[in-house]
Amino acid sequence: MYTAQGKYKQQDQLTEYMPLVRRQALSLQVKLPASIELDDLIQAGTLGLLEALGRFDASQGASFATFASQRIRGAMMDELRTRDWLPRSVRRAARSVDGAVRRLEQRLGRAPEEPEIAGELDMPLADYQQLLHDANSGYLLPYEELTVDNGEAPGGGEALGLPFDRLLGQQQREGLTQAIEALPEREKLLMALYYQEELNLKEVGAVLGVTESRVSQLHSQAVSRLRAWLNDPAGSSDESA
Image (cartoon, rainbow, N blue to C red; front, side):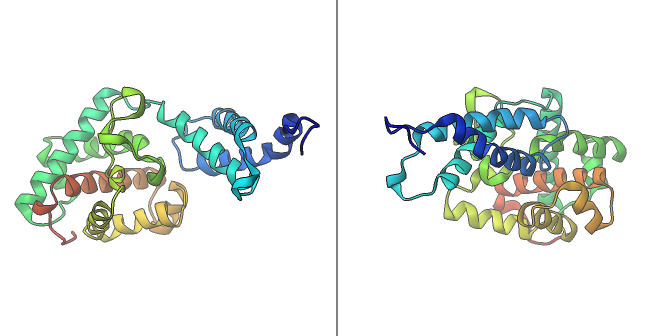
């Protein structure tokens, strides 16, 4: 693995571990909007592999494959964090959904249903569901890797303020668990299938007996409920619709 000067033969190593880059890219791509190209993930992952080749220290005890996997994944996530695939108008509308959900939960003492949220927003149900579908593209990154500081996106971009950003401490973790428990049963199952079982949207739809587009809507709505709950847990109810 080393030259006489004690350095990695990087080209040989790069060739050897490129299949790992591709596997990681394929695994991540199925969790992302269709607009994210596989080649972009592979390119970012290759940079992560090159960084791993230059920084690996065998004396630290970890295997190179483990170390490289972390660097490859991290590089792909860094690339995704630089993307801004939601128009500002959709971001604003998504925040308005959060506010509507929060107000309705306080008034009703339960999780509001879709027609109630659409009514609170003064829009037809079909328009509300389309908004959910449009907004969902910004919610599909793996939540454990989307933590940002103070709700600000890296690089100064506008953050969506995902509820999963709050997984940094035990108290917040418990709060998120309570918020998920308060979701309507179908949305709770959806979140478990997507985040814990790591099914993609099409596979979740097959389990729930709905279309992939409908899963997208329900996922976006669940995220709005979680954001509303975490922003105002005292005013939220543990009851499900």
